[in-house]
Each structure stands twice: as structure tokens, then as C-alpha cells.
Image (cartoon, rainbow, N blue to C red; front, side, top):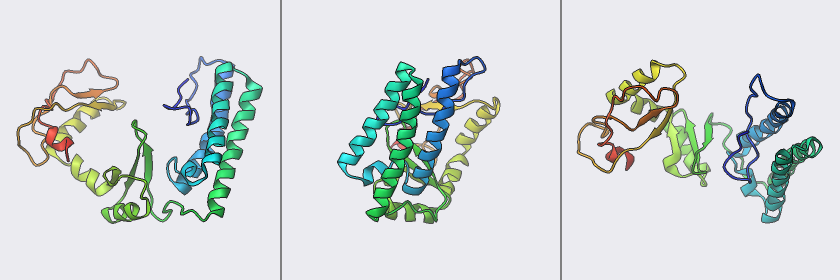
Length: 225
């Protein structure tokens, strides 16, 4: 059963397999309720931001409650697990109330956006236009500017001929996911973005046996922005 990287974050939902046991099905079903509450919180306050808006004492209690949830899952104690999930849902409500009473600024609900927690724990935000990206940068000081992207920018990156070749490879297998990109330190200038040729550092999740098509020894310039 998957959990996020730290015990400070509640377990994520996974759809049970057809062969899952009753305990796994129950756990994932209850976690959907908790995930729904967290998603609403993230839409209102920003990805994992609500805990930063309350006092250290309240934040500690929130994390302790989450620890109880992890412990109940590990022990496969259904009564404690159900109680811990309910406690986490109440905890989100308490944090929301405290942040509201303190007149904390909510995330800019006027700007449609996607917020994503990256592997390093930092938050990436994707909006539609560059103007919206600038607005987010002004209102969300806790997010690094280089993690705020506009769809206009992403479209420009994907339009590059080298990226179009990556797209063609991904299209060969509809379920393929690009899982890693590891440019080397060697780089020779060339091309508008630094992507001259890519050979063996694009990894797809479900086609490991696919013949490599690119050589990314020349991607260092792109990595450094």
C-alpha cells in the first residue's frame, strides 16, 4: 500500500486490485473520503499550504493525528483506522477555521490552476497564461518562481522538433509514461533549446526494452535554464 514520502502526509488513495482483500478495500475506500477533504483544502489554500498558516502547536497536533492514522493502518486495526480518518477530517476543518479567523489569504481562486507536489516536496503550479503565472507569483510567495509554469510556455517547449520526436515515441504506446530524464555534464552548443540529440536518458515506464532513440549528452544548457 503506497504512502507519500513522509509521515507528515496522509496515505494516498490506490484503487484496489480485483484480488485485494477486504481490509485493503476498506482502507482505500475510507481514504477516498480523506483525500476529498484534502483536495478541497488544497484548492482553497494551495497545495499542502494550510498547515503553514496555523501555529506550531496546532500543526504539531495535526501531524500527531496523522501519525495515528499511519499506525492504525500498519496494525490493521479497523476501529482505530476509522477513528483516525474521522479525526483527520475534523483536523482539516479546525485548521480551515483557524486560518479563516486569522484572515489568512486564500489561494487565488480566480485563476484556474493545477498544483502538484514534486518528489523534492516543493510545489509546482501550472496556469493557462503568462499573465496568470505573474499573478500567482505575486500572491503565492511560498512558491518558487521557477516552479510556476504557463500552458503557453509548455506548448512552446513541446513544439520544439526534438520534443516532437519524444511525443512520437510516447504515442507508440498509449500507456507509456516518461519517468526520468538524466542529462550528462557534457554539452556542446546547438539548437534553440540545447536539445540537439538525445540517446539514452529518456526512460518510459512500460517500454524498457524499446530501442533508445535519443542522446541527451547535450542537454546541460536546458537544465540550467
